[in-house]
Length: 83
Image 1 (spheres, rainbow, N blue to C red):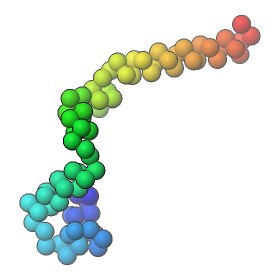
Image 2 (tube, rainbow, N blue to C red):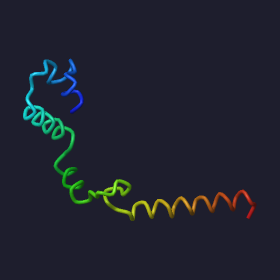
Image 3 (spheres, helix red, strand yellow):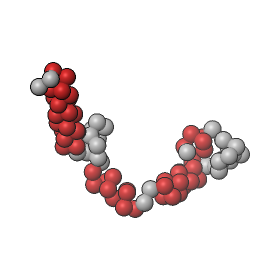
Image 4 (cartoon, helix red, strand yellow):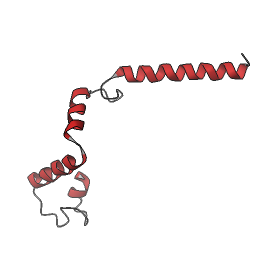
C-alpha cells in the first residue's frame, strides 16, 4: 500500500499525489487496521522476534519441523532399502 500511495496509483487514495506524509501514514494505519485484527496484532507483538528465520519468534517450531522431516526421511530410506 505504501508503494501505491507513493506512486500515485490511479486506483488508490493518493491518485492525485496531494497527500501529505501524515495523511499517507494515517491511510496506511487504516489499511492495516482493516486487515489485521487486534488479536492478531497482540499475537504478533507477543511472539515477534528480530530473528526472521523464527516463526513468531519460536525456534521450537523449526526444531519440531526438522525432527519430523528427519523422521519421515528415515522412514522413506527404510522403505527404499527394503527393511
